[in-house]
Amino acid sequence: MIKLKILLNKLTPGDTLTFFATREQVDNTCAPFSSNGYQVAWDQEAENRYLVRIGK
Amino acid sequence: MEHSSIQSSTFFFSTPLSHERINWYTECIASGAGIEPGQKRAFTVFITGDALFSFVDAQSREAWNALSEVPSVQIVADGDELRLHGLGDSVGAASPGITITERGAGTLFWGQLVSHLSSEWKGTKKAAFLLCHPPYMSRIPVHMLRFLSGAHAAGLSPELYAYLDGLHNIHNGQRPSEFENIGRAIATLARKSGESGKDPWFAACSRCATARGYFQMNPGTGYCEPASSIDEMTIRPLKEILSRFSGYYPILSHTSGEIVKHAETSDQDTRPRLIIFITNPPYGTEWTFGGLSLALATAMEGIPTTVIFIEHGVYSLYGTHEVPPNDKVFNVQEMVAATLDIPSLCYLVHAPSLERRGIGVEEHLTGIREVQNDDLAQILWGQDNSATRILFF
Image (cartoon, rainbow over all chains, first blue to last red):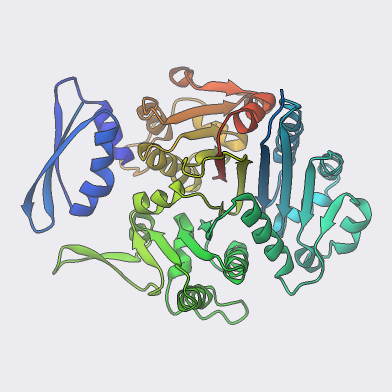
């Protein structure tokens, strides 16, 4: 979570961070950002592989 | 101003207590006792293990004796552990204001602690322990077992959260020749509690488990699975463990505190706020990273969280930290700077700890407010929270 927060702080306005994550990472690391001022979206790419996009 | 409520504070110390900690802690309690004279406050301090030496240490025993004379303060020492450490007679004679539990085969002190916490957290059906120490090298897991066994005996559901090196307690196949088998005792407690109709919840942090080899990727399924761990402990993401922190019940740790406000209209649905003291230097151990990670995760869950850098913890904010290339360690200052904008998270630094070391806060972190002991007392006791948890890392 902290690694993600540091990367998000380096984003320029309008940019989005895109990466692959497991279901557990989506639920427990990425999703909490949606209630802290970030837009979080993901698409399932495989059994336990999700493409996540996070922007401010 | 008249108040119909009582604010009760309980502290638990089981690790060595430095003079520095006793000084700021006793000053804070003394300040706290004096905030708003109309507000009724009670302070109870439970002490066991290595913390007991502070009763005979020439530099700290006077502070305890002075504190024990404050009418709203009660200090309870673990009599069995005092006698184990050869301190029973000396503490009894030199500190008449301190309550020493009777001989009780290692259970009386813990029963009293559980009973006290149950009466503070009115209506609670469970009690939890955040375990950050490994077995055998540390006696903290023995304390954890005594506390949770006491909770079970009192009809509460025990909960155990293994974090940082506390993960090693979940290793299966433990076979100590001279010590109590911690793995087996955890498994037995979980089973007994479940069989008696309670709802035990024993979990270990998945990040810490993965780092230590207890949670490994199965290449066939693409999912991580427990490895070499006892069945009674479930490996879960930290977020799931911290979701338990929303509940209204006591969570003890090796050094911890709880402040509960009793009022006829007290709102037990309000999530307890969390105060985390970072007391260790930044990189020599996982304490600082672990404390900050936990704080970030609780704040992201919306739990009001305050992090206070204190004692050696202030070194996290001193100088400019540069992680060498190829060194895989988090820059603690970068962690703090990146999380300053999280609404539920507040950082503070203890000014007397900085002064004692003759250092200041690095320029790019000067937004972090410095607090004196009386400010700390206001933060702990001067705010209108129904419940507060305090953890030391």
